Length: 203
Image 1 (tube, one colour):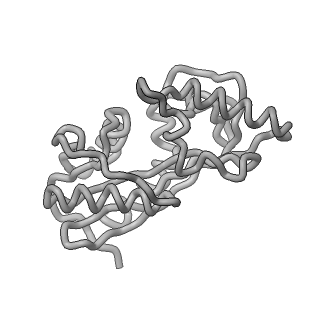
Image 2 (cartoon, rainbow, N blue to C red):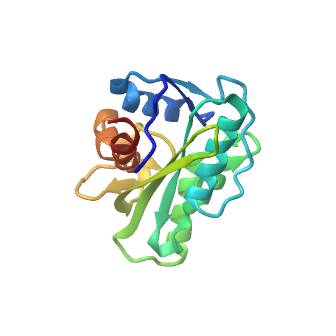
C-alpha cells in the first residue's frame, strides 16, 4: 500500500525550469502547489548514484531533509541499445561544458559514437524516468516509466529539451523535438511514471 500525499505544497527537487513546468502542469488537476529547489536556493546534491532510482532518491531525500516538505524528484535519461544503454544516468553529464549544458554537442557526440560502431538501423533506444517522492521522516515511494523508440539523425524540431530532437517515439514518425508539448506530456516516459505516481499517491 503506497503512502498518500496529504499536503497542499510539494517541493520539486529540480533547478530546471522546463522540468518544473512539466511537473506543475501534470499535478495541476490535484490542487497541489509546487515550489522548486532552485527557487528556494537549495544547493544541488551530488548525484553519485549509478542508477536512475539512486540519483532520484538522493535528490528527493535531500530536499525533504532541508525543507521539511514532501519532495518529488525525477531522474531521467536516454538509453541507447547500441551504446550498451549509455548515456543512461549520465545523459545530462554528456552535455556538460564549462559554459553550461550543450545538448547539441551531446547529440552530435552520440551520433558520432553510433557511426563509429556502425550501429544498425533502427537504432533502438528508450527514455526512462524514475520518480521518487520522499517524506521528511525518511519514507519514500518509487515509480518508473519508459518510452521506447529509436534515435534518428539529423536533429529535428525545436520543441522539448535535452535529446528530444533525435528521439523518435515508437508508433510516431516525428521526434519529441517536433511534437506538440501537450502530446509529448501525454505519452512520454515521465507521463508513464506520473500515471503510476498519481494512482499511488494522489488519486
